Length: 332
Image (cartoon, rainbow, N blue to C red; front, side, top):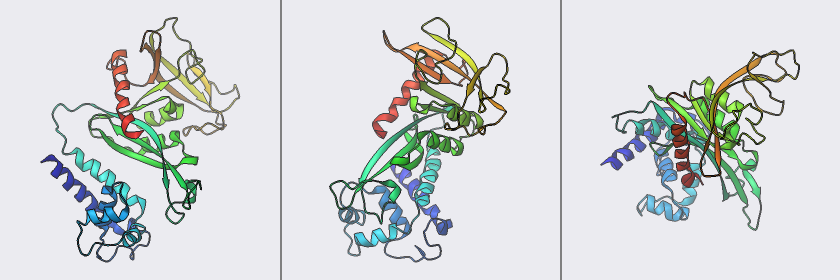
């Protein structure tokens, strides 16, 4: 049965931690070095499978009411010895191994990855949650904490491929997007297409995708509104699909020259752009398509992308972006 194979993949992924356990514990050579009632495998498996009941009930269920079932306190102590990197390693190892179980017939040359973010609030104590995640004391002796999860979702396999967790008050979806793109796995023989809503449309995000040799598809504000494409010269039609070449500069001096036929755009000091330092006399060129098409009788959508026009005409661009909404019920 497929679910049994998938469970075995998870167990094998957790077992890979043993090859370098000292890298995943707070105190190398000491934490989780001895085989106790709660092994490292048990800690990770329990935390991954834990439900919404109390810790005590979840532990009893996980250990199937065995006589030597550990206490909630013992589990908490063992959990505190593991670094977050342990779970990140299991996550990536599992995704890589699980993909080998997928049917190989008619493989797609593209992998469609939707980007999205969601905020989670939770109760905690200072000894468990860092101060940077603290939101407010509220009407509780413990306090409210908040985190922002930035995740990428494979629209075909319906699985999350990577994530970055940030404190709620310090979250930066642009920075998280770039971090994930720079390290994201690219399967041999395929190209990644990163799909994002308006909150992900920025020159820096585009540049990070292009520098890794992949593709982006972002929704942006309409052409007649103030935004990233607000000052371009568009055809005098309601629908269009045009290519633009933008020269990004980070110096206000006109001595920084750009090629004829390009749009000159100044990137201020407060705006992130990782491939051109502020004050530089150089410029950075970006080429991409801008599409505008109707989505109803009176509404239009604008998309920016570097996908090739011959393979991705307007109809396929519309279909590709609409597929992104599959991430929303899961991440909301």
